[in-house]
Image (tube, rainbow, N blue to C red; front, side, top):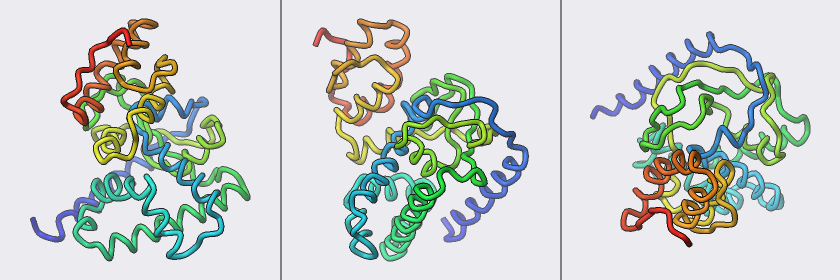
Length: 254
């Protein structure tokens, strides 16, 4: 493939997004952030935990901070989600990839400082997109809600850290342009979350109780709420079974 093709594709994508952004409408009701991120967007949790990391390591700066950050799940997210999805040419250029990651870390530091000093910036609302319930994501996991994250995940993760609600003035809304992304599945494949982390994440939507394994979680949900179990099954099939294909995930009495 010619070198310029990915760049041309991104330019076309930006033009399409810019056209749709002009037709975006303001938010009209508060939105529960948990409902936006479970089950497809564990990457928002990764970013929230990275802001925790920055807070806990405020003594680090420059190359030392970047090196430490590269060893966190944020480094995995950058390589396997951001680069792989949007800048695949960086996967073949270590120097440019490292430079871009350093810029990402510096940007996160600035955003955290801005948020701590002035709160959420109303001039930079999060973009949410709409897609019918049941729409298939790129992993095959179905969408369980109508609203999804389009842009502004770092800002959303700051709100998640504060256990805040996404208020109408904090977001704008437009139709989905593409297939919904399942970043949870990507992060599972690259080993950025453990089985217990994954189950805890699902617990933000499903009654998994104190389960630590996927099989036990399925059993708990099946025992408590048949409708929830029916919704959870296809999600686990698409996300976890493809990561651990040798496991049998039928509900058990565990």
